[in-house]
Amino acid sequence: MELENGVQRWVVDISEWDPTPHGFSFAMSFLPNHEHSSITRFVKIEDRKRALVSRLLQYALVHQVLGIPYNEICIRRTVEGKPYLVYGGTVLDFPNFNFNASHQGDYVAIASEPICLVGLDIVDHYIPEKESVREFIQSFSSYFSRLEWNAILNAGSDDQMLGEFYRYWSLKEAFVKAMGEGVGHRLDNVEFHHTSWENILVRVDGKELKDWRFWLFELGKNHVASIARGHPMSATATYKKTQRRAVFDEKEYNRGLHLPNAGFLLRKVDELFPYRCGVVRMPIGLLQRGDASENEGEVKGSH
Image 1 (spheres, one colour):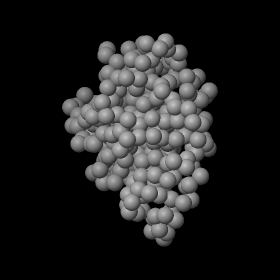
Image 2 (cartoon, helix red, strand yellow):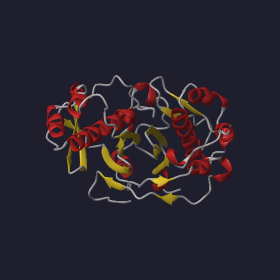
Image 3 (spheres, helix red, strand yellow):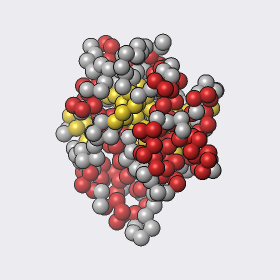
Image 4 (cartoon, one colour):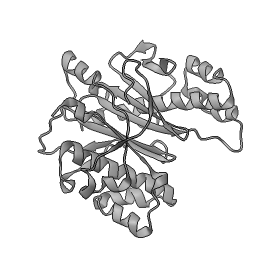
């Protein structure tokens, strides 16, 4: 199987799914029982929908890409909350297949990679009701470098400032999530550089990480998604233990690092059910940003 087949980007617009209580229970019935409490613990139906669709995406992607039967898929989470596939005796065509999911607002998405770590984060341009945009973002100033903070404050109008803030925030979250870090990871020393949000690179404590790549997607309806792709050796100790393989020579790793990025494919919820996983997928018209050479087509903080 070609390595490119391990690069997947799927997204679901949950605003288009309005299940009856029976329909919701039917969808949840395709998941193992141990996943149910992570869904039913939420009170609001929108939060339950996001949690359910996130889990369905994970099982559907593993089933469709790797060909593992639903009843043989075992997905667990690290203590930091990062999901991972328990390989067992499964023989895979990809050296280090891994995935990450995110959801906020109307969208739930998943991304996977065959070699590199993958991090995904979605943000909805939430506009605060009881405070100004400047007051809202000011409470997050300690998470940004001086360069990033100046770029945010000088972006222009309130809407432009908020957009700049959320793009930086989404990239930082995707980077941290790729490594399997929890919410307490330091962010002010993680500094992103870009040219009109293309050719994105990251510096940590002033040092550029050349074995990482990043992309931004405009999902529509004021939602942005960020993808991070990085070296498996950058993973946390707990997440590294879950990987099929973390050590690669330079040639092999660069092959994974420079695989073509993929645009998101729009999925319907019922396409994620076991008997529908072979259906044709419809591309979603997304604007991808991040690498000028490749313009191909949550509850917040979830992994």
